[in-house]
Image 1 (spheres, helix red, strand yellow):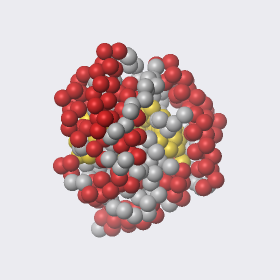
Image 2 (cartoon, one colour):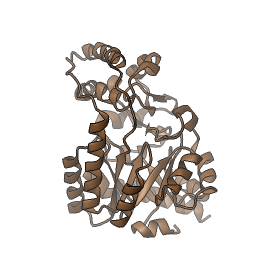
Image 3 (spheres, one colour):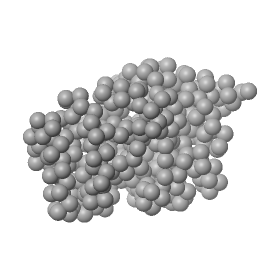
Image 4 (cartoon, one colour):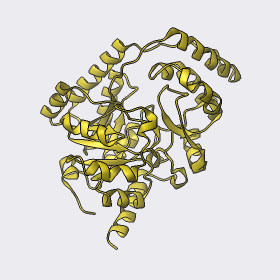
Length: 357
């Protein structure tokens, strides 16, 4: 498979990036094995505390000599509406009763805490000199971008529209992940509302590559060599794959989550705000169905995410999929239970066969 400047800059052997799935999926075991296979492993640090990130980076350095990256959530503006919070807590408490779980009073985030944590995580990324740092939910400040670049760290933004990709390039970032509507987990939109950001990946890639000159990384529904080759033919420099890595043996995803993806049908995958207050794609379950009518009245991210945290933990402990956030892209029937090595080799070989016809 032909190389490009993006791959050379990160010393990658194949144009695959493992999506930085926050919440425990991207363990050092998974991320290091991805990097050891010549792809780019990414730590999803969106929910990590600074000391946890430091530990994971040090574990990574012990497990691989290859490059890897870290993903951070750019803090968003949000308001803490007490009425919204109380109504959401009442709804969540009712579901906790079904699990015989007494909900603890949640630690609600504040703008100040979110900003401080983000800055501490950034400091660690710079001190540890990781190869790349990607961002979701917005564009980091000019000062942050310059600081990362000065320390030899590649900066990668996340866009869901052409206008967001253009804004990322104008901000001086090195590359952009274009997230199609097929992608699992949270939407990365920041200039437009979620409904207006639901653009299919195959439509999005060529429109973005026509408008920006920085490397483009395609994300959303890519599970095999067919998706990789299609993305490359449309102008992408690499692909970012999440759900495909979620079901690998090295993944830190809960076994219930893995099996849910492996058994899901494409029509089971829906978008919801129920768990976090932000649009996210996953396998529909009871909580998502019944909370749908309340979605427009829920607190925003990250408040709702904090409110449902204890419910999700209790459901995970009890292996109750009805109250877990089972994130997945729109191609679950293409997921396999295999090792990272098997996945990467298979995808690359399939793509080479197609591209060399």
